Image (cartoon, rainbow, N blue to C red):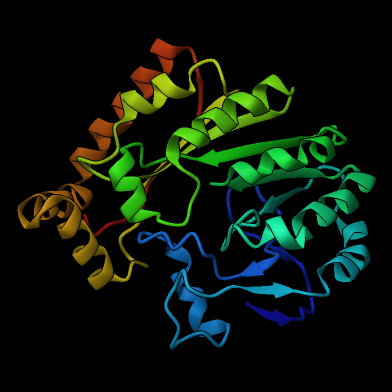
Length: 271
């Protein structure tokens, strides 16, 4: 863990539904094998480091946020976070995210928190101070063994489902972010069954092959499912018809479970 400083904490975003991103940490010890944010290593002095084994914290984040928060307009959205998880394990000790949320709550800005961590429940008291705050829980890998291998540092998948339930019970508007959908590993029906009644809506996103560490992804999946199934996964992930079918299935499941579907995000995996 390293202490760093930042010039800005609210960065302009091109992501759908986000005007600003707030990344309080650099790196992420969840260590997800499929993480698209690995590209950040070359911009942050971590080219020789293993993704998932380093994290820097922005020691001046609170001071910078106090200077920048007033520029956010009433109708603009802030996303926590886009290239890290602001509730990764180190947050339990440092509480930087919690303190940033307190500052944001004073200005009642529009905030969207996306995380894999049940630690979010610690901050329900702060979240409830917002008039406009949503919490999304990423839950694309529902198989327990697959989750332990592909996202080794993240909160257990069953605990994430329970986190959604607890958020809902505490009056927090929340959603499931079913991402990444990996062919033959992600079970959409099982996920929908587990989130039913505990979310306001659901979003889907397919696996994005382009930013992956191809060797790590291949070797990890071969360890998980074997070389033959890995080949089938890769073939399906590059097949437009496969994703058309999956999108239709997701739409149908949302109707069956009475859950609003707000997006099915796709990537050009060399169709």
